[in-house]
Image 1 (cartoon, rainbow, N blue to C red):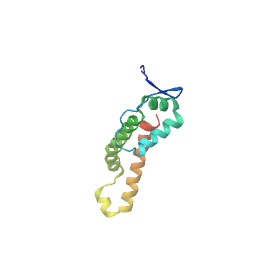
Image 2 (cartoon, one colour):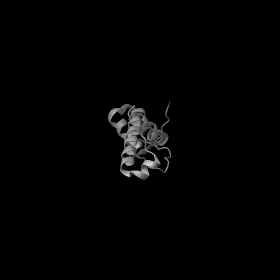
Image 3 (cartoon, one colour):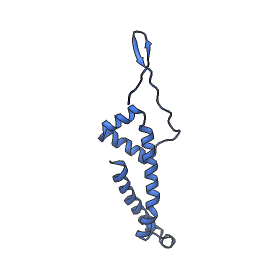
Length: 118
């Protein structure tokens, strides 16, 4: 990939004319922010490469979307396996909440291992 840079003279100095690509009007969620922190702290080369290419934000949004899709697809199966049914919810709300929290924690561990910390 070859960059063609143009320069603008400001006083005695030539400054590159850099522009950022258009960014979507969305904010990052939990998983995008976790991925950003991981890249910045543990994979600085990849982080800098994404920043310099202007693709960091789109990468983080992609990870965010994929993580949310994984969470939504895993939760019903984990809840069914754990026995967190609507009947249990009606009978014993606290037990149901505990089971659902456990299922979400399991799903998030998988997401962190497969998407965020790679």
